[in-house]
Length: 246
Image (cartoon, rainbow, N blue to C red; front, side):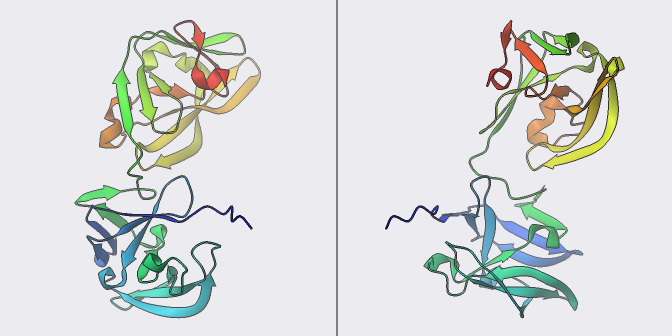
């Protein structure tokens, strides 16, 4: 019988990784592993000796078709117990996993690669961000109304995603945009705030966004406005954008 379940992919991480809680080091590792638990981005797993806190089994388990059953732990650091935030696949069919520990991302308040803080989740070594100034002609239309028209976009190329066109506010009908309460976070770009667009009586919620203070690798899109190609009509040099036409 053919086993169609995805293989567990594990690769060494050359970066020095640390995780802290309340200023106390919980993880300090130069030997971590990237483990792709899902196809989108990897998790960090650490050698047992690189965990600088007590691991206390709590009787809970975690199950995975590929990684095998895992033992869950509370993490105790300087008398503070972080409940059910770590696990090990001690008897994993994947031998390399047996002596590695996984710590929940949100259990710690600071994660560092070298001395640079990482946000949201571990960054994939295969993802690249390029924010390139361009003179392409970008026109955004919604309900037959042109809401943006620019020949000075910044094109954001992100591995695995369609190009996104970030436009100066001076080229956007900001009078049609209303700030919303939505926000999202990205480990490569930072925190985005959103706008809804009102065309007559119709309100199109959360169709545009902006990174006011993006992370350094995405600094080129600071303060610019981007629209979902999938929810508006975007023309680039007179042709539908790749995402609009897909």
